[in-house]
Length: 381
Image 1 (cartoon, one colour):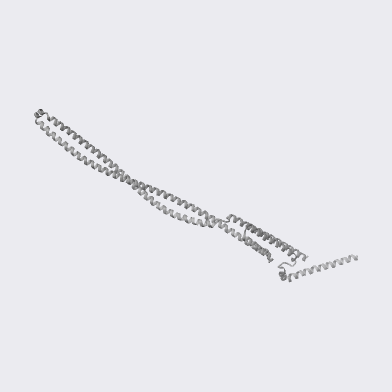
Image 2: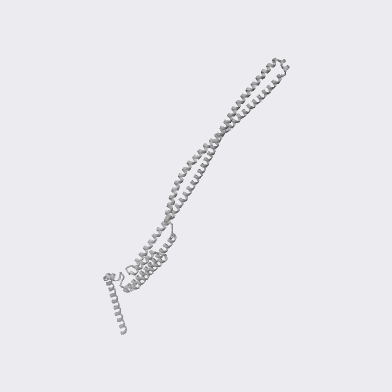
């Protein structure tokens, strides 16, 4: 019984001592929290001195994550052959080695800024590409339109010019034919006049001779009619009268032929002159029409030439602008597709590095929270 009482007394004393120890620790904790906040901030940068034991291990892992991000950005810069990313990796390395406050935050800030810059550049490139595609498409379309218009106008002008030249040649030929026609008519008029003059002379001579023969026959017939005995005695009256009658017949026949020839020649002349007159009028009307048509074609051709000059001026301006926009938009060293792919790779790499930092930051925060919770638990126990 004495032994049991001794153990009970010992347990009660130990329990009392343990309670007093916990009360002292709790009181010390309160004092530390209330009295050492400023010194703790200066000494441990906001971390509880109870957390200091785990700080070095967490910091070494954070540093490792930071250096891993720097290496990843440097590798990305080399892969993409990017001077901007190489410069960024150097700045990240400088920050990582600085051991300054909030290293992760600064590294994340630098990477976020670069991502934003690259995304802005990508957006600007896309806008420029869209602008170039639109301008090149529209300008080439206008070039085709104006080129086709110039060619059509040139074809019309050539056709009109050729037609006008052909008409002028036809007019010249018609005028030459008219000149020959008039010359032929003049020659025909001259011959007709000479023929008519000869006819009149010949007719007058024949008529005069016929009249003379007829008068002589009358005299002889009258004479021999009065002296029938002389006619029967000599027998000469019949020979003379017969001869004169033959002459009269010849003169009458020749006169009739001359008159007939003159009438036929006159009729032919009249018909020829009429045909010539009709042909002359027809050719003159044709000349008038062709001259008028040629003048119209020349006028229209001149108007179309002016139109072509205006369209050509527009085409020249379009070609000048096209040359300018091609110089601005033509991809020489790197195509837009290649540049877009490189930039997307750079952004993806940086975002991956940023995710690494975000994950590591979250992990560190969880570990520190866990440490703080455990430390609090020890103090509260």
